[in-house]
Image (cartoon, rainbow, N blue to C red):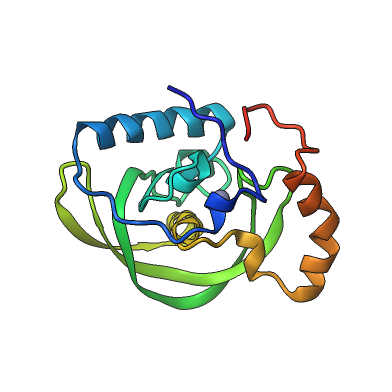
Length: 181
Ligand code: ZN
């Protein structure tokens, strides 16, 4: 089932998400719904707060990046109760976008590598290293669980320039090909 995507201005996007407990059939169904919602909207990642649920869960599928960045690993994964352990390596600039901030794309600087702990769909605890575009998508989605959106990383000047666009989104003056709330 597809869910409407909550856009900038909705309180849920500013909440600190709580752990998923227990990890059960409902969680698996929710993950399937999140993939469906993400693909329908043409996204490469989707975090639970973006469908109105402030829980620690996000999904990614980096396949679309392989056209522009052939070296990108294809990772189709769900991260449950993730904990960012380390962000390291070179600074890496990339123009990010977000299904919750339609029409906005801005350069964001982040570290190029991460070490993250999470549970998979069977509840198994894992720890993994990711780099490049995969790390980037994970960092972006992880921010959502902490109540952050990518524009929070921009300079105050950039934020000022975007103010009008952001308030338009918050007041619903925005066109999308997918259902929003
Ligand atoms: Zn996002």
